Image (cartoon, rainbow, N blue to C red; front, side, top):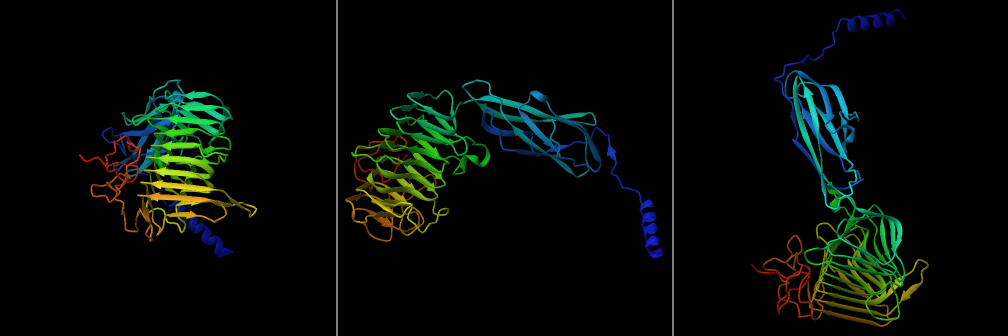
Length: 453
């Protein structure tokens, strides 16, 4: 007991004999602070939607500590920006010490207030720093975009214009007997898990200079290239005469999901000059449907680039259908057609199948990227001509190979100068390519016609 008490007193005496070492705070106005940037910028943001977070570091390169007497948003409570200053979520922080050779971190968000304006508008502010009689600032810059919002709605006979984007949350249904017309240059943004269901008719006709956009509602930071952020566009039973041209559909789970069985072979959906990409699952997924697809680029899909099952009539002409060989590896073919589908209860649905593939590039990382399955229980007609197909087998009237980049792609799937696909196609009634370039008498295979300078 005496020994323990002696040890306790010894520790107390040692502690009392030690002075707390504190770095002196200098009031010298010549001491400067530095910043990791002079302007913090955000991408264009939809109004009333919080941004991703930006970071700003404030450095004290001096030997002495500096007291930041004030750090605040110049816009105060009216600012669309918000700050977390060294862990403190406030519009204004006072007497923040930065030790010599140390720094503090400021986290910045912006939530743009809607202003009822068609065109994008500037949203700016500045973070003001005051110390030792000095004043400095870091600019905050972003652009806001107001939109027209739909949440869990049904629409009928509507025309969407390109004045403002349309922002969908939940489900938007185009009812039976109704038509949604989307004008060129219109942008449709989908919140997380939002869907567009078509039971009636969709007419979305862009042009080469004013493409229609279907994508996720967050496109700041990395969100502009992350798949699976919305569900997709679904064409339901009874839907017919749908047309999509000069559109970009990306970052969903499924680009186009078509289930429109009927008693005729007329196209339920015509897709032309359209890009479908960055899908967590499928590019075009269809069941017992009639689809014509031409001049389209379908790429980087996690399951099927094209998966057309349970019969139907499928015509693909001058399309480039490919997964990045370095990113997508699968034991299954990325392009599949089948006259049958195994249902959840184990029953097999078989329907007549017609497949026509002309002047397409079907590529990926597997040894074989195309399969057509025919159980023999329904009538199947398959016509393949002048396609470049990644395959270990020869296919009559087509070009097959497993050589790296055999088609001759550039990074954006246009064709390189010495591309094998050049001038290898047969002439069709498609006079222009995906972006509107005119095809010559010896058309290139795939969606793009190479134009030599």
